[in-house]
Amino acid sequence: MAKETQFVEQIANIDEDFPQWYTDVVLKTKLVDYGPVKGTMVIRPYGYAIWENIQRELDSRFKSRGVENAYFPLLIPMSYFTKEAEHVEGFAPEVAVVTHAGGEELTEPLAIRPTSETIIGTMMSKWIQSYRDLPMKVNQWCNVMRWEKTTRPFLRTSEFLWQEGHTAHVSAEEAEAETMAMLRTYQEFAENCLAIPVLTGRKTEKERFAGAVATYTMEAMMRDGKSLQAGTSHYLGQNFAKAFDIKYLSSEGSLQTAYTTSWGVSTRLIGAIIMTHGDERGLVLPPVVAPVQCVIVPIAARKPGVVEACEGLQAQLKAAGIRVTLDNTDNSPGWKFNEWEMKGVPVRIELGPRDIEAGKMLCARRDILEKTELPLDNAVDGIKALLADVQKGLLEKARRRRDEHIVYADDMAGILAGVEAGNFVKAGWCGCRACEDKIKEETAATARVFAEGESKETCAVCGKKAEHVIVFARAY
Image (cartoon, rainbow, N blue to C red; front, side, top):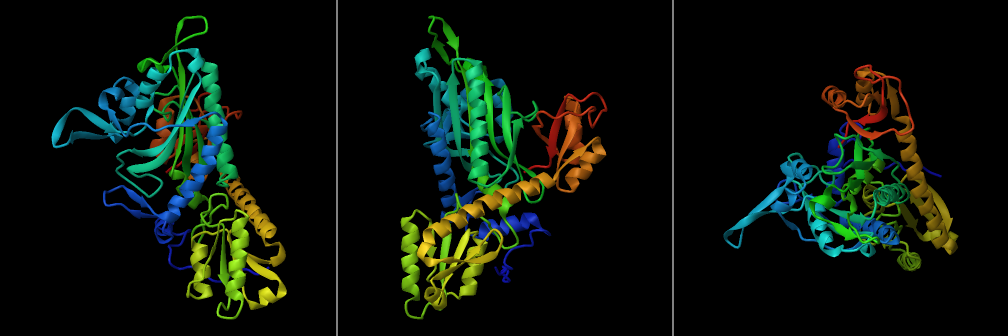
């Protein structure tokens, strides 16, 4: 095996300026461009293809759990938000409101959906009449708007794409089970499709979703040691069901209030992929969601038979379901190598006259930047095995990095030192909101998730008996 020696110098140094590196990568690999309205983004075809692959993988998982897709309106009457007091208070600063339409002032302002609990709750109250209508499980793939002051493509924009699932159930136990089942679904997807290891568990009361009884999260560690909330699943209890009158006639003939859940992930997952796996050359994409899993680069393309051999190999791989492209442009091979490396394509095949004569193809892995020879007569099996190795290797590498950067602290100084060094920090917490607030004020770290099953004797802030162990981190 031979190590690659060419480097892309079009992007900022990942170790010296991580934020600029991120911006350079998302723009120069043509994932996104900036929209004309501040805080918006245009997702370009290469970036949208990643989202389509994410959609495909998640959608099949949702449907296997009996979830059906639907679509609900973008505009929601403001009066709907006032029905659940905590919900409207939580989202008030982010809501964009339409006050005029058709040249006239509206009699009631309309919110551009920041989330859809209110409109879906309203519709569920119409659709659910009997216990026979339950459980009801719907999901929508849509856009939402949250008016953000500080934005960054994929991570935090005023408008973004997501899915939001909503379910209604006959009992608290069933709804809580659904909440946890969706959290496990997200975790399995994150690890097996995105190659991103995540910590899962409950959020503190301060960090939970507005109007929920409990919020469960999956937190991913980025290359700079910050946490990214990659998805959430909320147990809503009867809060929204009571507010929107979601009632059903039980099998005993009594009128009962349903229990509901909601859960979602967004295009933020693309940011998670970039910041988990990316390196000094740019993107490193997991094969499962990569728009192009394999690129073929002809070597000495003008020589007889080379292009034809490359086209035949492309057809063979494509027929086997591999997302493959042939770069037959007139750019030099070195330029192509750099370009496709920066775009994060998992495997590059170099095929020239000598390779064809020897019945071999030279394959470069993007994850470890090494080359290996594989036989041409068994190209499909060889490339599939290589892609599987890349997928597995990315998860293992990310898990090692994360585990090496989880530390413990007994006091505030330890928390501060831990997050300053780019770590997740586990520390004891008494359960007091004041102590949680103090950690954020003095370290810029927030409570990401409960570390279930772990114990500490004292709270890292006040020294009183610790009721929980919390994972603290600075976050996007």
